[in-house]
Length: 487
Image 1 (cartoon, rainbow, N blue to C red):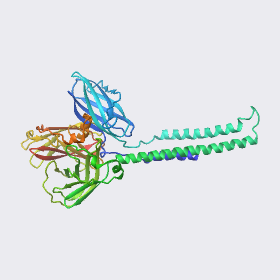
Image 2 (cartoon, rainbow, N blue to C red; image 1 turned 90 degrees about the horizontal axis):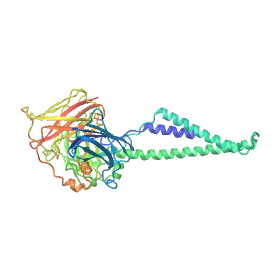
Image 3 (tube, rainbow, N blue to C red; image 1 turned 30 degrees about the horizontal axis):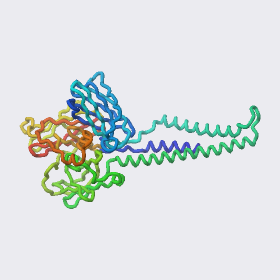
Image 4 (cartoon, rainbow, N blue to C red; image 1 turned 90 degrees about the vertical axis):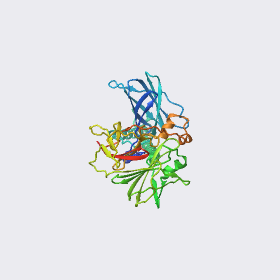
């Protein structure tokens, strides 16, 4: 019985001590707003804590034209991506006919896509939303279930030993006859042998569980935000992935461009989150990204480096670096910077006034922000005279970009008007023939942008957040900042 107790105790300890693993810095759920043919949809995919697990898919249509939505999940790229299982019919809300919900099993890790088939008064349409599938935690076993399993295991072990002992002791004894000392010794020997067998069975089960737990721990480490080393030589910054587990499975040379760049590098001064640089290093021949820095103020900086691998899976490399005052060259291209006051626990703002008099307003209602609630973040840009700005331009192919950071750095999200998915992954999900070369040749729109900007998102947990909103106006990239307290 001691091996059985040790085995079950070890299981409980592994479950209790397992730490949650999260990629993309604490914001795993997918938020997407876009069109499925003539239908405009807001899609939320709440990924499960463990894989295999059930993802919750919520879809809100912006009109009454949608009659039915079915959902299915398939690989984003590679072998088997063309095979789509039988779809599930999403449940339409009885109180809100524009709202549909569905549940999907995510059976594997990696880049997947949720496929929505939409039927409505304007004909059928389809939409594919990329989803990064990965295990985030080991769920704890309920104490009642652990106690029940312990009782059952002990009972089974005692029962097996008793049955074997009785069979050896009494199987050849006539009914009603006394058991001789010889048969009693035979029964005891059989029980001793069976005890050893039971101990070996439990030892083998423990070894299997330990090996499986170690494999899961390795996989969980792989999907955590990989570490990177940031080093400075003069004003030239180098970013190099250093996570050995990640490097064994990922190749820096196999990345695909997202918004025209292989890496989106964010330098955030901590702890105040009062300075932001959004830069785009170039990949060198030795797997390192390098960039000549603009003028940067001294301080301790958190590094977030967004990349997308060839399978469409988004990664955020993380690290830190201490910076001296750097007198660099003026920024050019898509590089940008932002300045804000230090974030405080009492911060909660809805207006950001820029140096040239531009005013950016976060159009949120008075209700407190709630964690895990999908929403549309709406902003309006006004010129120095208070009129809607009429000179906004696309910034890297989007109306705007936003970086959402929790004060303890446990959450970092880089989102756009289409949501939290990367453009590279979205192109792969939308067309099976998408490739790295076609994404590199992507033609960005040049039309003017309306002064009203919106982005779908849901804050993953309570806390103090800073939002950096970046947009391009009159050939100049601007950065507004807002603070939010989430309950």
